[in-house]
Length: 490
Image (tube, rainbow, N blue to C red; front, top):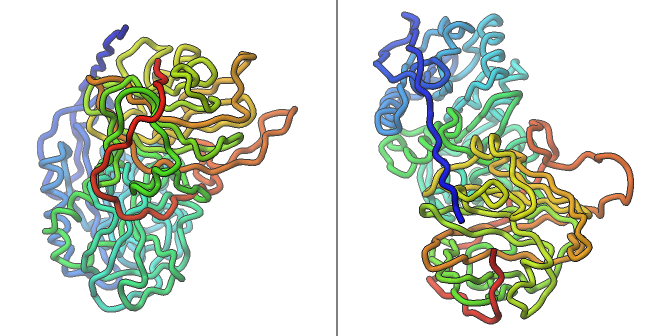
């Protein structure tokens, strides 16, 4: 039985703008008391000046019109005061160069980020403020050099983040491709990287991030290396990429932006990667050529029969079409029994409108998620979400879009999480849930006794050790995964 949950956003307050900011427009107030989401585009240059800046400013303003946020633009660093910045949900550094803020302005911006502000860096934002350590960490990497403008292939590593969710696995485009002084992968979450074999002049030894995100010292940060050319801002795919980064930075879309290294794919979107998966029970999963698996019929379960797992971090991306039902099963033995996973394992639920112990993020029937945290972290139907399900000993923890929402320890002698299989559920004919990029990182066995040991990638730590995206391969042709065994359901 389901109990529908309704959420309401209170809308309060009004805007206050300083005269140094150009072009303010009316906006509806939001729950913070500020005018509805507001973005400041900052494009001051103290070095090379890109002739694409006017096109970039105009593009962000148009994105604001369609995306529901107000955009102001300035090249006056006097806008960087604590009083003025608090009226903005994000600041876009649009191809800024050199030393653009003085010490007091830097202090104001640091305070803004620490209080939850958003940062979007575009192209030469990485060629800015080399002597300001805080900014270097926020941007993620500093510019080193670039070859001539030329076509290149961008490999999309994260298909759940709003900046890249609409892109194919490979993205071919022309731009000025920066080399960076350091690789941000260990500190930030890489969304896309360059295939250095597809162009000349790459110097990052085959691992060349070009877009990334992170939570940094209380704030949200997104950077893209694209945007040198005027043509970039007229290209629909780049505009959507930029819009997704802004939506993340202002908090309109949630994403897991913790560093991610050391994972390997269990399902990478290709038919070949389904070789070790088996369908249990009625229904099936349809494999589309964009690399997604979508439930069809049920109640059944697609489970990974290749091997069982003990201590691990499982990550996967999922999306609901509407008010749908599915889940991820862990810790169950291989069996033809349709209720093996139900009776001997645990389900991490996907169904935002069920009762608390059976709703999204719950350990189904055993422990509700932290609903306040869950609701803040959850993207709505039609948008991608990311689960991390971490099993160590009998302890089971769940992160939704980088936010820890559940922590459960098994005490049931009929169940054990120390060795078991993994599966995704197809719940029924009226439920449509899609999955993609299922990956796993095996962890050291947890000590038998003692306190809470540090764990890589703990949510909320900007300095957490990295956890990493596997290489993604081109999606295959549409296919159906055949049924082989009975169903497991809830």
